[in-house]
Amino acid sequence: MSTYPEVRTLPVPDGLEGERVDAVISRLFGFSRTKAAELAAAGKVQVDGAVAGKSERVHGGAWLEVEMPQAPAPVQIVAEPVEGMEIVHDDDDIVVIMKPVGVAAHPSPGWTGTTVIGGLAAAGYRISTSGAAERQGIVHRLDVGTSGLMVVAKSERAYTLLKAQFRDRVVEKKYHALVQGHPDPMSGTIDAPIGRHPQHDYKWAVTAEGKPSVTHYDLIEAYRAASLLDIKLETGRTHQIRVHMSAHRHPCVGDLTYGADPTMAKRLGIGRQWLHAVRLGFEHPADGGWVEFSSGYPDDLEQALETIAAESR
Image 1 (cartoon, one colour):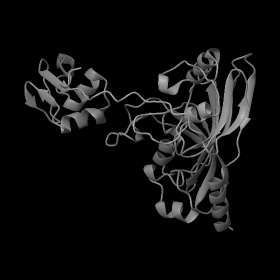
Image 2 (image 1 turned 60 degrees about the horizontal axis):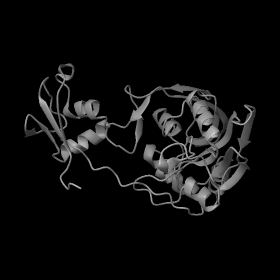
Image 3 (image 1 turned 90 degrees about the horizontal axis):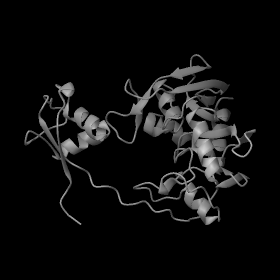
Image 4 (image 1 turned 180 degrees about the vertical axis):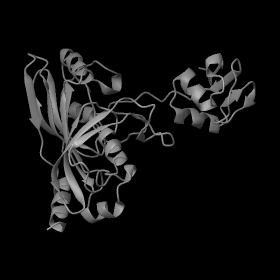
């Protein structure tokens, strides 16, 4: 196997005349703008033989040379018990779980903690082999820092039908979120596209270049410094609730990544975003009948809610 880096060279199409280097790399090679900028900052991009910065403008016909990043090593599934993961429902086609905080849905590069897939494997569950090798059976995900209900496909039939339901927005996904302050109006819809954050690859943001994203919310109870919301997702973008509530100036309590007040999180004794997937409804892949599952709050969220309620008396 060659130890030399892979370098790809392409002419800049006339249609990209005057565009920034990072934008051109993103369009031609499929990288995020952030990744393209990182390659340029590392000196791995040349235009007509000269090292180019991310913000340089290119002309049509220029030769763009990019040293491609190395492919990540294959991710392995480790069968490891997951403390606190509860089986809510189990049959021949699906298993519905309550995912605890601090657990990823599936393995990914750089993640060394426990996963839903690994936890199910350790418990002896056989799940669908459809999907990428490291995420077999996974038809949707919750953030590592978000707890709540997930459904995992056990049969190939279930995987295909559930993926279609998520794609076609048939699935009902409801969350409860404790957010800072008091949204105005108290019930409403946030319709704002979400895409990669322009500066931070690990974050997402409301951006004109993002995908359509719609979040509906209703007030459950208002406290002195926060509001408990019932949230229904019409779409399922990564970090959607967290991004929309932050953009609405009411970040989830404890969500320091998206601008929550760290002093409030410390006062409430919460080390993650107050966000829980409380209800999940879908057409069962066996017979098409509608099924619904619900979940109560984990102890840390319950305690934080009791604390802020006591402060409001």
